[in-house]
Length: 297
Image (cartoon, rainbow, N blue to C red; front, side, top):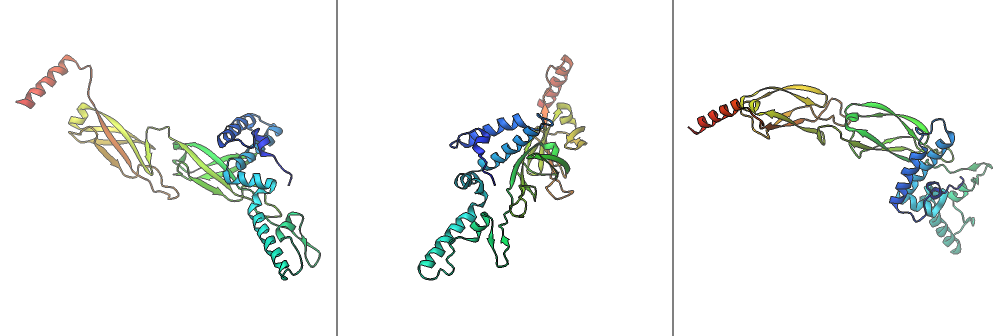
């Protein structure tokens, strides 16, 4: 595997902070994004490199492995294990238990092309490919129903199903959609983190939705029928006479879908906000005055 300088790709110094790396990635990703460079193979290749570099350098643990082991950073754990095995075997040889005198582990042999077996063939190490991480930005209304969407990851189109009710910050794994494995090893996985923004008039708390409805003074006092919005349409509500400001009503099953529980929904809570009339007419003033006198008599 040829060495790839991820710092050079993102045009940052090796001592760059996480914020500087993030800023550099966003700037370059915008510049080389396939949507802005249609049918440009070079931009597509560059965009893939930028994403790969960000996958490594934006992750603290991966960055340390990369700084220590370069192109073999994904196999850092194997290298460390091999070092310990070498130290153990060398110590054993000095004590007369060394056996064949081989100072190198199978892992190092495989990294250099393999070790010959008894029949002359070579054994090669198999390593799982690199896991990819992606962030998907959606609106709350997008995840009210299950739907399919095509993502472009490192220049490759991937069709995924997004279940209804997926939550902000939630991460799902798409098996086998990561980097290619080494030595016929399995492909890595794709981890997608959802960034969900709410541009609706509803507040979401777990699976329950919250909203408010304005009542005119007369409906609040006398009662009546009104129409209120839910997330998937309008419903008719009957307001009881004498309804107070701040009164809450619960609409069972009119909340948000529960993740991977088909047909199960939270509830919708509506708060009534009684609106006091302004700019009343002289006739209305007279009537309110009469009402006030009746109350005090």
